[in-house]
Image (cartoon, rainbow, N blue to C red; front, side):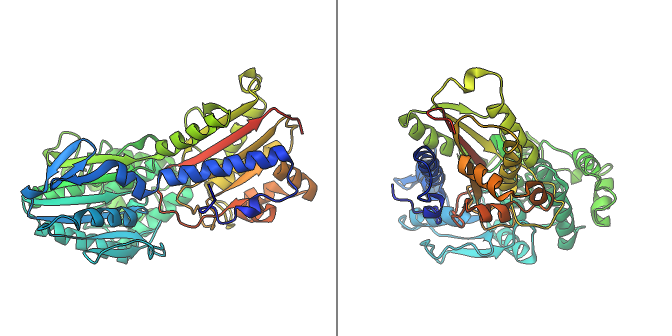
Length: 478
């Protein structure tokens, strides 16, 4: 396959590489391209949704379109423009079906190549900090909900990034308050699961509140098509679960804020809401079993597992023995980087050494506690920490390791991740690069720019968990 997704592919394959290193790099980059292709929204939609005999078929369920007077399309996330384009093509083929809608997507996302029709409005909002334009889009979506009837079909397109892209503060909270607490949470080192618990309880639509609004308005049918970007694919965490029951509580909110020493830093309106919720239980989000979900149907149509499957199938044909990283990629990025090195390069257990070709695959989402003002992202910081550990030891095999955000962009860099191998390690030692200094400034991307091994694709339209691939070969010893 000719590389078409990785823009700096040739830069990553310099002519001076040894044959074993060149082969590992080609193999791992091909694996990455297969992973990206497998989770492109258009491909995920095509596998899960079709229309036959005027019936919308989602996975194994059928919805007779003759039973609906109109279709409203709403949603938000990094992948929803691609999802909407696919859906629009399907619906345009059905006569006598009226549909229209609005979705929020990240500002700056290139969608000129998509064949979007005029019936679905695209609203550009900000990510990861919500803005007024995003709130405007949500308000327009709620106008459609209010205009709906029992015979309306609402198709809700959801992907990662939806938490920030679908802002609607509760009545007592200003948008500026949400912006403040989002900044505090992103800098605190809190996990995305913890951040989303707080977002749910401060929102008028998240944490199942969209389902509650629809139930209180028209009790129309809602079909949510969801692409997961969270570890474990918990539907209530993806975009903070607007159409999904919320098992978390305001007590959880308080505990998380206390854990990260944020209770005294958050805006007064949010503190007041948390206190009021101790007495006024109607402020709580709708829980499992609430009848507002009776006519709501949530479908997980894509996740990083599709990418893992594509990689595994390819690497098997290349003669690699496959293993997965235990317990997913979670926790602080720089700690995880050390752990990966110690686990798979210093491990006394010989099970990782007896295979001539071994492939390790991990998925998840790491966190970074910001201390500096450099350029980087969670995967690049993890890889930098891995290098910092590796330079102190002797590696007795050829290896190649990549970690990437399949969205195409991570952190405040223009890279999706980076690549490290024996050659990169040799360059670090040769140039005497001060890795701890880069780590202290959260400046991982600057170092990988220097080394020439950042991974550049630009926005891919995908939105699933991050992926890590480690290839090891014992054919030679460097």
